[in-house]
Image 1 (cartoon, rainbow, N blue to C red):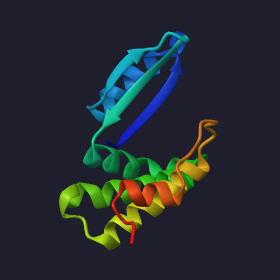
Image 2 (image 1 turned 90 degrees about the vertical axis):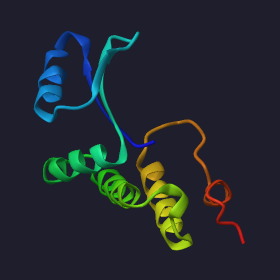
Image 3 (image 1 turned 90 degrees about the horizontal axis):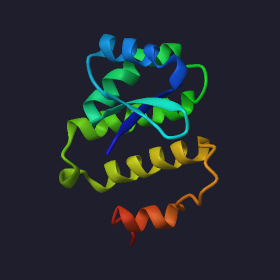
Length: 121
């Protein structure tokens, strides 16, 4: 699954409703921690949003470019029909995205991702 999330303090959530209205897709939910999020799912939807936003992104631009490239590839090809070369490109995009995350949870290694994507020799 491919998802883009926009987060905002719930006190200012009306901005997310404005974004939702402008892009015409996604769903809004309030979290238990005082934040509200707008989530957009789907390869084509994420690709199209990122294409429109890329010129304006200042932070996490590497992640955005990698996610755009992965979403573009995945929106044009069924997952089961991806070639080994395409899967390797997806793996590299995943590693870029992971590498730019601030998440403290354990990240998957290249070897683990190769196994998941059935790219082991």
